[in-house]
Image (cartoon, rainbow, N blue to C red; front, side, top):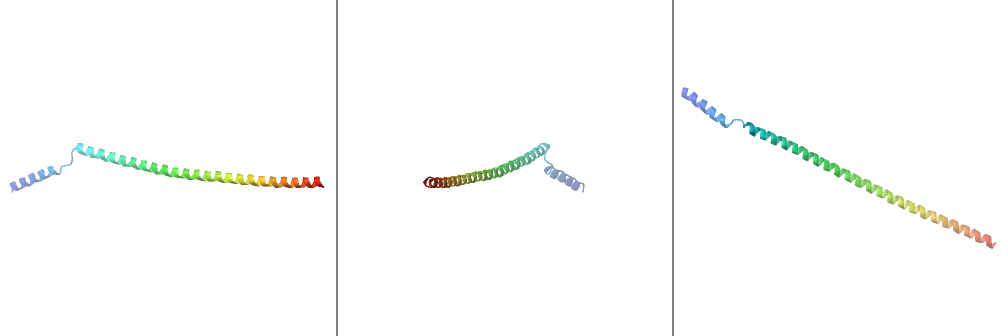
Length: 107
């Protein structure tokens, strides 16, 4: 019986050596790898968020520029129409004045 107990103790000790926890340096290396990986993922997430924000802002700026250009074009068209109407109004006034002047000089 004593031999049997001795055999169990040796078997337990020998199997325990195979399942022993990793050494301190191995655990530290894994810990630092985990910290690096976590930090790297955070940085990549921040970079992708920054790029997305820049894309959105540039798109909005492009839309604002297009709207502003459209307003400028519309303003130029309105100014051109007003200038044409003023020109036509002045021409009609001049024609009327010339006709009135020619009637007065004939009459």
